[in-house]
Length: 198
Image (cartoon, rainbow, N blue to C red; front, side):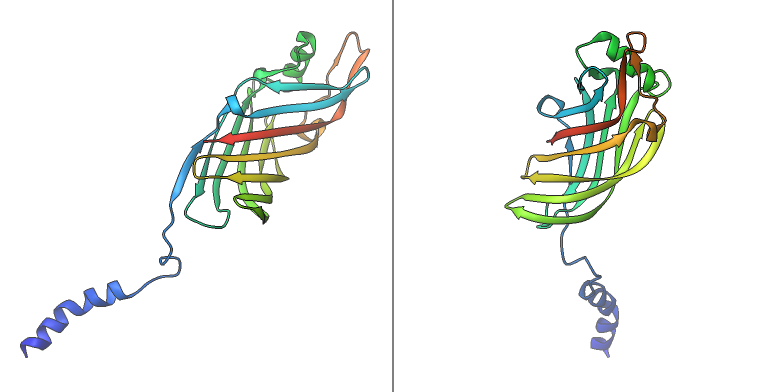
């Protein structure tokens, strides 16, 4: 009788520790990374009636969360924030026109928020090609965009490279003009990035 009472007392503990839910057999380790703008690049390329142009951001920020215990590429979060006035072309008139077009007073930042990876394939040790989808917000207008990227990962660094063609007018941005209308920028732009997270 005594043995029966001992069994009834400890049976629930045995059952609880003996059960496992899907996913519990693998330990996940989510690591946070911070964007190192000093070793990263973010620029916008475009055309005009006089010449091609580009604006390079001098300072931007972001974070990233990834399951580093997984052999597969397992990204939980990517955030990027670029100050509008951090973008410089080397031509002050052009810069000020672009700042006005991007509505710097009411919307001082360009932001990207990751949603999901649509496809991914390994290309070597720690290297991948992927298509990521997320929300890009420019001048207060948000659009879901998909971007083909390359991703390299080590234990301490994640590097994401890619570029995305866009139209200014899709974000409610009127292509700026300057020099009494003699310089007219095209509607098509390309965002180019090389993001180093550490």
